[in-house]
Amino acid sequence: MSNRRGLLIILSSPSGAGKSTLAKRLRAWDPTICFSVSATTRKPRPGEEDGKDYHFSTVEDFKSAVKEGEMLEHAFVFGNFYGSPKGPVKAAIDAGQDVLFDIDWQGAQQIRNSDLGQHTLSIFLLPPSIHELKRRLESRGQDDAETIDRRMQKSWDEISHWGSYDHVLVNDDLDATEEALKTIISAIRLRRIQQPQLVDHVRTLQAEFEEMS
Image (cartoon, rainbow, N blue to C red):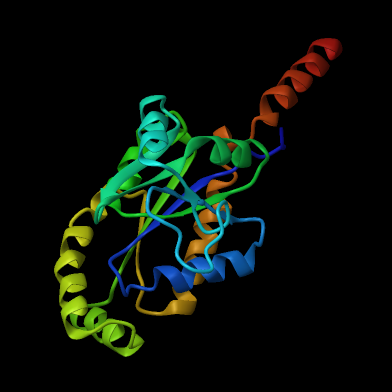
């Protein structure tokens, strides 16, 4: 086991609030941070690799994994199941590697309530305004007007759960938000529960103290 236990870093926001950009910046800052690879029952798309893009699964195997408690979180979205396998995440954090989750508030809640919840760091990103959120979605040029409207309608449902997160940042300046994220992660990495080696160190100090007595 590593001297430091890894974190389950949950990053949530409405679409267009800068989550994907900031996740990439965090990986550039610390390449040891890895993305959680989700499991899904949907069919692979051209170019997607099993184990890299997703863990592709049958419905039967996915349901069995949920029943056996092998999923940290799961959801049924647009006719397919999606979830985060527990095994690879536990192995990563035991090795001192942080795992980054790009999930919504429901997935975040499931992870916080799991047996790995004590190692969770949840962060929610708020846009500076709803008008700016819509402008960002339009400027990406990835979606048509109908899709943008759907994303905007969903955005308030996401924002309404901001109070359940450990930290909340208003992303009105990308560089400043990035620095805030780095500060938060650096601090939480020093949390007592993330440092299992402290128990042995304190025992050593106690033994030394008793020898001097």
